[in-house]
View 1: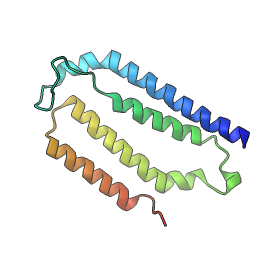
View 2: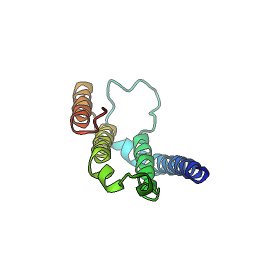
View 3: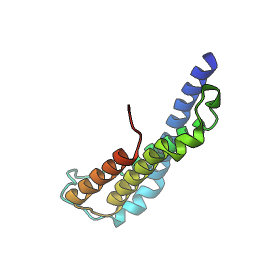
View 4: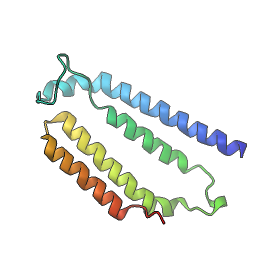
Length: 135
């Protein structure tokens, strides 16, 4: 029990470290280059532009936790990681990746709010329909 707790805390700290590092790296190195290519839209309300691309760090942290999950002894509890990744968890991972790509595309180029909302709803519906079933 104690080792599982340490593993979960270690996973949380690893996800925090990876996501923070990715956010800082992306914001400091790529933001100026990509921000100069982005057009201003009506949704931009600040006088000084705010750095974007924070979703990449969040997605990186999620992937880091999934990679750490590969080292958790789940077979002792009757759970197979390949079954999780091949089924329910794989659909959630694909839906999250699609949402991250949509947000990244919106950060680079101006997408109208209705089209971005329609894309988010579509991604959510596909994830709900093909994702995990709670009984």
